[in-house]
Amino acid sequence: MNRRLPPLYALRAFEAAARHASFTRAAEELAITQSAVSRHIRTLEEHFDCRLFERCGRSLQLSEQGRALLPGVSDGFDSLARACSVLQADDGVLRLKAPTTLTVRWLLARLSHYRQVHADAEVQLTSTWMDVDKVDFRQEPFDCAVLLSDGHFPDEWESTELFAEWLIPVCSAADAADAPWTLERLRAAQQLHPTPDRRDWRRWLQATGLSDQVPLKSGQMFDMLELGIVAAARGYGVSIGDLLMVAEDVALGRLGLPWPTAVLSGERYYLVWPRAHRAQGRLRRLRDYLLAEVAALALPEVERLR
Image (cartoon, rainbow, N blue to C red):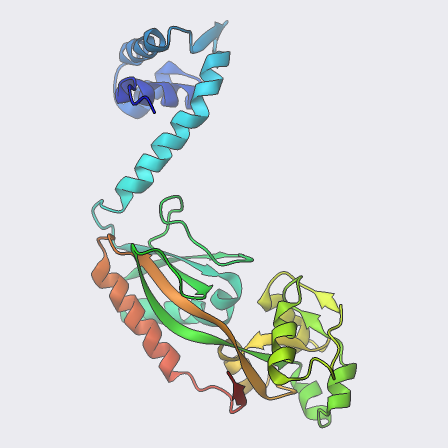
């Protein structure tokens, strides 16, 4: 690829002027004069031998060539900002990405306590629905993430396993205590599916050897684990939950375990972050705290199948 690029200052002036549709506002943002913005734009137009802006009365509009140039320039500056942010001075905030169900059922309460214990440690949590958990530290504004994964991560990441995913059926506490859960009752129950592809029920039935005795039904389908658990707690059927994430609700009598057998899904929750991140000390402190919280949590006594 030809790397002969126009001056970076000229591209910066063009991007700011295009975003504001004003040379004056671009000059204010860049802390230079309006005439300097005009000169930078002229440098760019001479480089490309075309006009990038057109005057329509008092308004400023991009030319056809300017509209073609803008997306790539904007993306380029965004990428530069993200690349530089890893090495910029630590602002004292860790920006953490995590899946929604984990956030609601476990992580939010732990981070609230973490802030109380470590008054100087601010963790900014973003809860995100992800069909497949992932993060792109080069494109997304996060310092770390908790992901459900098989553990295969890029070499430039640090990763620590927090806990394994154990799948187990859950229902309302009243339904669990109503009568013994026989095979016939499990077969007749309304299945709630926390994923559209019904993979969690399929995994559980296969691991317990019940696939031939309990049919996999269409049932009500949701797009996240949390919705299935909430629907089960309200008595709409039996869903599949994660043993750790339902432990507190089971202990408090808000959820029941109709068939107390948990199966290992093969995936685990990991805390990950870039090895080059400057806040290694604070990231390790957060890691150690989350590991201690996992170790301290009392899980229901159930049969476990690996």
